Amino acid sequence: MYEQLKSTLLWLLKVPPEPHDPMGDVHSLRVFRAAPGYLRYITIAWALWELAILLSGLLLFIPLAVAAATGLAAILVTALGVLAAVVFLAQAGISFFSLRLNYEMRWYKVTDRSLRIRAGVWNVHEMTMTFANVQNITISQGPLERLFGISDVKVDTAGGGGSSGSHEKKEDLHVATFRGVDNPEEIRDLMLQRLRRLRDAGLGDLDDAPALRGAPVPDPAFGSTEALQALVAFRDEARALRRAAEAVLPR
Image: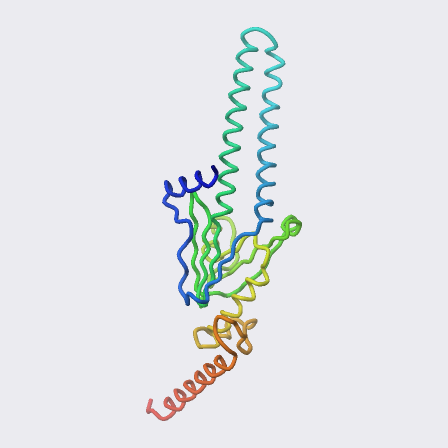
């Protein structure tokens, strides 16, 4: 029943079941998903919100029921209570279905050159970043997230400095978040390796990211360390030839 409703809704909203792969080598593609602990985390938040709605409704209904104990007023209050209960159950079911669907439609894709994050069903939010623009990768975990064994991996790009207030939406354009994952170190280390490899190959400036300096790190998707070292040596020789040509040519 759930899968049928899911397929129908995705078809009506024209939402592809999976986002397209980001730019890069298809053989280097890694796909990550939100952890089951994230579903439990957001389900508890949903349950607490629904409980607050229910208690608020009861606080409004009980005085009315006491005031209209008999007669036509009692019938009207009872009918109102039944209607409110039906509406409450309907919205609770729809909101839980939406919560579950949003969890299942959360995708994190990483290639050797870029990453793509997609979330949402009613309002689909998709973000693509190239590693050439990445400035910082951090892991954050609050007390409740620690309880459920999940973390967020945040990827900042150039121009993504701290802001607040009216600039909040602008800041979001520079921050991609792998939300609710249970393997944050694996995701961070994978992106750091691929970012370092791009910059060691001359596709970025290591001076802009001191934490990413160092020798190439082996990765099964990119071959042996010897091959990487040969590419680095070729790059250094090309730079030396360019400097020699600039020294000989008249200015």
